Amino acid sequence: MYERPDRLRAPSVFALGSLAESAGAGFPPIVVPAQAGPRPPDAGRATDGADEFERPSSARVYDYLLGGAAHGAVDRELGERLKRSQPDAVGLAQENRAFLRRAVRFLLAAGIDQFLDLGSGVPTMGNVHEVVARSRSTARVAYTDVDSIAALHGRHLLAGVPTATYSAADVTDVDAVLGAPGVVEVIDPARPVGLLAFSVLQHVPDDAAGLVDGYLRRLVPGSALAVSHFTDDDPRLAPDVERHTGGYARTTPRARDHAAVAEILRGVDLVDPGLVWVDEWRPDPGRPPGPDDTRGHWAGVGFRR
Ligand SMILES: C[S@@+](CC[C@H](N)C(=O)[O-])C[C@H]1O[C@@H](n2cnc3c(N)ncnc32)[C@H](O)[C@@H]1O
Image (spheres, rainbow, N blue to C red):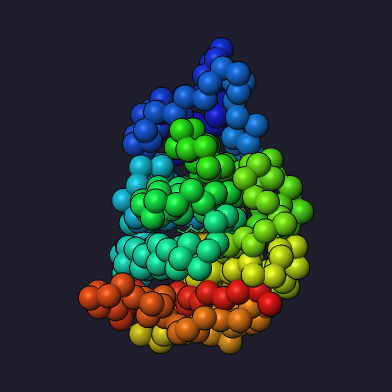
């Protein structure tokens, strides 16, 4: 269990590391400079009225599955439950991140040089700005996530990266995301944007297709959309999503079938190979597709007409 951040106030720092140590959580130390105030404005803002430090969060469980350090005991507990109960929870996360890297490399090669990442999670373990840097690109990246701990880590990790920002914002609020200071800072709305929605729209319970349409309408033609979406279409996996993830801080992920995910991508022309299993989307040469039990996400990339 986490200690609430308001118990961690110090005159000039907000040291999440000490919280983590006391909770045995393994956070790397985070120090927010004095001019930022004793407590980041988003820290501890519960996403659903509950205390998000005491309940596992999708961002942090995902970080745990990927081998990152930005998680606490409650997140590890759910991560372990997922590992035991789902055929390959770690493989699912790794294949999703591998798709993220391939999709971003593809979009960079296609000329996209600014990315808006929705529901980014903790921006480590091979995330967008790292792919950009490895590609020797100067593309800009605006990360967003509703999870305040992910945002806190994000800001800390990106402190020395002038081309990337991290904003706490709810993907379901298009105006809030597009108007977030970090997004306004790095994204030029007059030019094509790479809109990234990796494994996040399953947290949008209702009209995810309409929501994505709302984003696309605000982006200029030539902008791109990359989506991966959790599914239980493969009967061999048949994951009981609610049972496995019902403890998440905000919402229980909603698996969608191929047709419903295709609907989410209705506003773009999909590039080859279309909407496919995540490991089948333009696999790296010489790398075989993932094992069958990692096929828990549909994936597709397209360009706005
Ligand atoms: C499975 S993780 C995916 C992280 C990252 N996009 C990736 O694919 O590597 C899902 C992320 O969605 C975020 N999320 C869930 N509901 C959200 C919402 N309403 N608005 C923004 N982010 C949300 C979670 O906090 C979490 O970081």
